[in-house]
Length: 147
Image 1 (cartoon, rainbow, N blue to C red):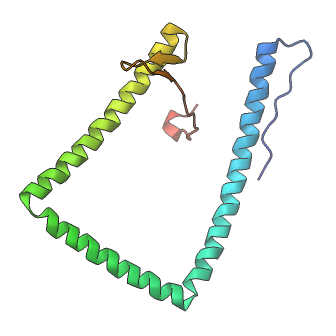
Image 2 (image 1 turned 90 degrees about the horizontal axis):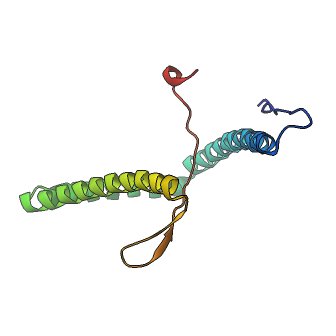
């Protein structure tokens, strides 16, 4: 795997720009390291799967587990055939979807609040002070969104 391109700056560059490039270089090196670890992890997982697939005891236990899971899924489907149970199951799915949508909306509102109020804290209705935290991650752009 090739090393990431490290950007160098001329002397006298202002602190903000220097800091930005330092962080950018850290990001690039971490992306490279993550990819290396992912590749190695994949190889190690493949080796472990080969070991497990060649072990008779594991193979038997795995087959038994598959059979039990199949019976469990069939039993669940039989339970869900009842209209009241199917209705309850659908209600659970709907509530999970609603919760997901509410959390996404809250995330947007928190970002807007933080920009307007210039603070990362907010007091909830119960008087508890909460901190706004973010978890950033990178995703690859599809070719149609690329440069």
